Length: 227
Image (cartoon, rainbow, N blue to C red; front, side):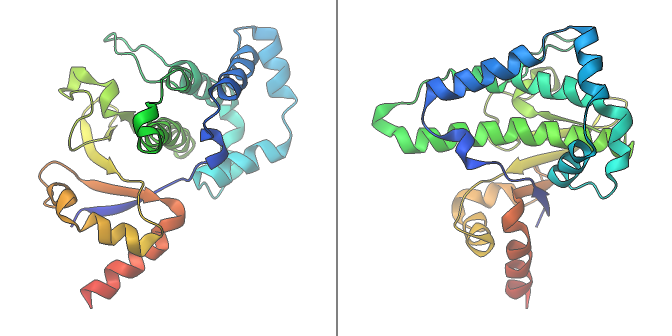
C-alpha cells in the first residue's frame, strides 16, 4: 500500500455556503496584500512572536524561529493562494478567489460543495507544504497536478491531486488526497473499497493524504488490519 501522509485540516467555517461573505472576506484580504513596499515592511516589522507560533502550529513545524527570516516569502505564498499565480510556462494556479466565484449546482448542492471544499483544501495545503519546505530548507516545491499541464497532467487527473518537485523541477512524489469518512478508521475502510483500488498498487500514486485529525486513527486501523 502507498505511504500514508498527513495533511493539515481546514477551518470548516471557511466553506459555509454564503458566497457573498466569502467573496467579501477574500476582497479584504486582497486589499491587505497590495504591492506597497513601505506598508509591507511596516507589517513585517510589527509582527508579534505569536505570528510565527501560529504558523508553525498550522504547518507542523517544531521550531517557529525558522520562520522569522521568511516573513516576506510567507506573505507572497499567501497572496498567491488568494490570487493565483502564473509560472514561467504560463500555467495559472487555482486560487481561493477564483474558487469562491464558482457556482454551486442547486440540483447537487451538497456533493458540489464538498467537491469545492476539497479543491480549497488542496490549494491551502499546497501553501502550507511550501512554507514548511522553505523553513526546513528541503528545496522541495509542492503543486496541484491540475496547475501543471506542462508536466503531462490533465484537468481532474484520475490518479494525482498534488505533486512534489525537487530543485531540478523533477517529480519525486505523486499524491492522492481524500477527504471522506467520519474518522480515521472509516477513512481506511473507504480507501480500501473498490472505487479506490486504482490508487493502491503504487503504479500512479506514491502517497495518500488524509485530514490531519484522521491520521492517528488511520494508522491504528491499518495496524489492526495487518494483525
